[in-house]
View (cartoon, rainbow, N blue to C red):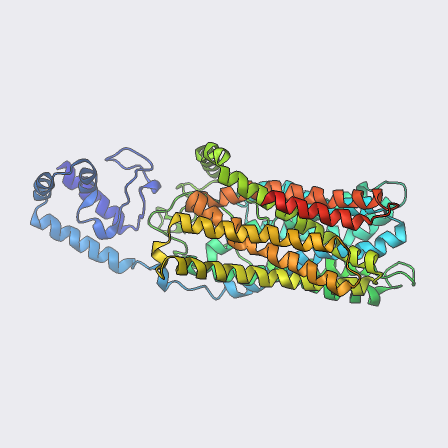
Length: 570
């Protein structure tokens, strides 16, 4: 009777909609989280059959066990299966659609990435009138410009883990509020820093802004996991992240115009560009964004759904694997609890303490030793650090370079800085499509038969272009061409070729670590790169100061150093 009793018990649980044994103690295997899954469509065979299938390979023995189940029992179980299937039709991934409630959230996520880039890039333009007003040295400029990156690097890991236990909607609100307040407070802190408080107030508030902006990618990762089917996530993420690119270009276009309009109206002198007003407007825009977010945003859809539900779910850490997203967001398995409610929790009780325990276990099970012993991992880490050394410098110092080297005003310097950003967008898109095309061609047109060696060679090729290309452009730029247009072309070449690492180490992490640990590996290679990039911005300021009276321009040394770092990273 025991096999039949267990069989009926599992079938009844299937009728109640229990998708996994993780929601109860299984009386047969006496385990909270057995390896098998109770599937209503398989309840005809039941738990006893499933266990015996794992232990017995002899088909004759299985037939004997099946004989225990009488025809009457089979008819009863089939009727239970039919009722279960009718009551809870299984929804395949291909049938899933994005809930209409998500579209306002999608628009707000796009806007917040735009605001994030706008607020960050604005300082590289505003530093010109700020330094003119307060007499900042190049070293001080570097310290102010790098503060945001230091704050971001310090906060990205803790925030990524916090997303697992705190509402994504609430965390995003707190982050945007803090960085908007930091943006509003930047003018006041700049004045205080020039009134005998050294640079501590200004650097602190810029670091706070960078730390607050670290909420954007981890919270969006969790929101997308709750709202968007897996097969539509890449497109949705691309739409949202395009806000970063548009925000960067908008900062170069809009910021000089705003400073012109706010001159003499923001508390500064009439003959000084209105950089204070620019920060006020950007800060107010962030606070205004909070209103629709509060009213419209939700952590997950109102209706129960199976978004992201998979049969063989594996808990892991994930991130967007773009830019410098070093966050580690805990990916939970979708299960169905006793009440038939779909949840992202991997435990039946679903409290934060159990989640923290699961995160600790996952950290312990990660292949740390294998990563640290891998030459490929160290290569990706060096490549990412070299890329950031160059890229952070160009983002922070390009307007200053055009202003100091070619005598351009703030508006002209900002306009000349747009070109490299556009080249970066084109380079990233071109690299991804070209790499995919090459992989298919090298595999004789069969994308399913691409060998590991072929993938590795293609990744190495694009990564080499992404480092040797900028190294060449920056070395040529170190001669300081007479025309600003020539310098713009070389900077555009450097940023555009650097963006081809999207098909280099950026794409290699999943192939190197597998689907489960790709996010962890990307975080390992990103976080050191963020720190190296932040340091490089400060180092550039010190070089420019120390060579201010030398016969050779400090910019020559800066570009030569960046060129050598790119070569070393390759």
